[in-house]
Amino acid sequence: MKMKKTGIILIGVAVVIAIWLFSGYNGMVEKEEAATTSLSNIEAAYQRRADMLPQLVKTVKAYAKHEKETFENVAKARNLATQIHLDGENLTPEKLAKFDAAQNQIAQALSRLISITENYPELKANENFRSLQVQVEGTENRINEARRDYNAKVQAYNTSIRRFPNTIVAGLFGFEKMAKFEASAGAEKAPDLDI
Image 1: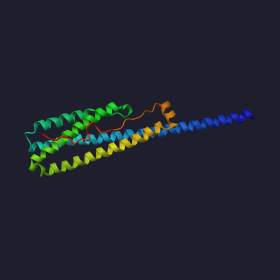
Image 2: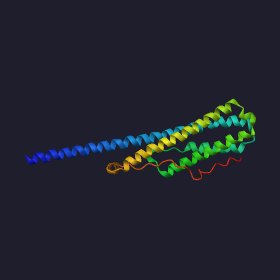
Image 3: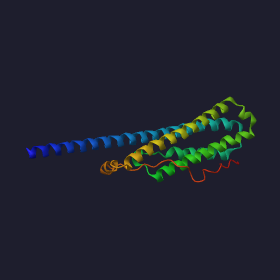
């Protein structure tokens, strides 16, 4: 009789541990997937910005023919930025920093492109240009929101895998801390738009 009670207790403990493992694992998978989906949303917002650049350059070029260097810088920045892709499964702080640096170059090139319009009042009055400017502003807001959402989801995931007893499950199944987007070095200073 005593042996039967011990067996039932051991089975009960094994069931509780199994439920805890499944629950912890599934919760971490859910949080990790939410974070990687947010990362994809960031890339989609950056891609939207990169896709709008040729249109913007074409509109500005029609008015500002002698701004060749600015146009070349925009094209170079866009090419670099669209070549770097992030992989949620293999995301390191270094890869995130490289991606962010490329995106910052495109943002600076875009800012310079927009700033040259001050020299061309007829361009500022152009309906296509004004529409593109509004789209660029909206895209920059989307990028900012996507980065905030990503960081919030990464924080939830990282907190989840670091809390006890989840840290045991995370260690058993190889869940690792994910990197967040951070401000770039020098971001506290306004960009120099002198062309």
